[in-house]
Amino acid sequence: MKINLYWLGWLLLFLGASVRGLAQTPDVFRSEYMLMPKNDAEAKLSRLKLVFNMPIKVGGSDLVILGSEYNMMNYDLLRETSFDNEKFETFHVVDFNMAYVMQHNADWRFVGVITPRLSSTLNNRLGQGDFSVNATIGAIMDRPNIEKPTRLVLGVAYNSSVAVRIPLPVVYYEKRFHPNWAYVIGAPKSGLKYYFNDKHMLQTEFILDGYYVNLQNTIILPESGIASSISTSAALAAVGYQYTIAKNMFVYGYVGHTMFQDGVLRDSNRNEIFTLNDAPSLYFRSGFRIGI
Image (cartoon, rainbow, N blue to C red; front, side):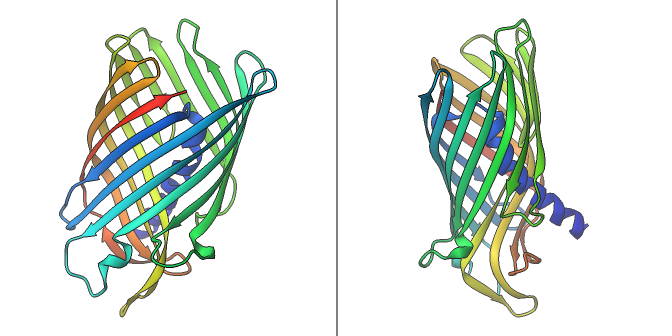
């Protein structure tokens, strides 16, 4: 079981980093708060997310998108341990996104994304272990104005922070098969959408999410070694509501429960040496966003 959790955890981290930037239309601005309250492992996780993107039109219809995404996580381990929990109580993930979108024809666009990433507890001065680079190339087929609007994404992504550093495929498919209904198949998100009208929408989600963060202050575990990084990965189901304030401006809220969760400390070879949190948890997320 441990082996399966290990590889599933790294797969979630990869999928969350690669598909998120390709499959969905980027936001100009997003502010979001997520909470997983205290569970049976006496662990609590919260996250503040801020996203900024600036699309710049080049040539006839191509785009350059420059932006960033900041995530601040608070990991509260409320049970007693043999080490100082404050060394990883707050950690930070900052992505700097640089994308080029080339319009091939009315339906197809080619996309290339380079994402330098800082992921660290930021206890000390920055070092080599705090940085990584992700890269994704792909093609997007977008047909929003047909009877059943459809989006398909095919691509290849490379993430330098995962255990298996090889390019992996990206696939995402979304279709509005009825005036009120749409489905999404992909990662990090799959689900169903129900549109009451242009203002109100309900959505079910199956989400894959995860982070890998460098520990600037290592943690000595007498029985298992020295921890130099922390990773958290989860698969969860949620249902939510989105309200359209104005064109491309939304507020939303979701409630759900984890189906899988694994928060662990890892050594310098990225082996799991201590489990922080593997118990089920409730999940809450709300935010405000402005789309492009």
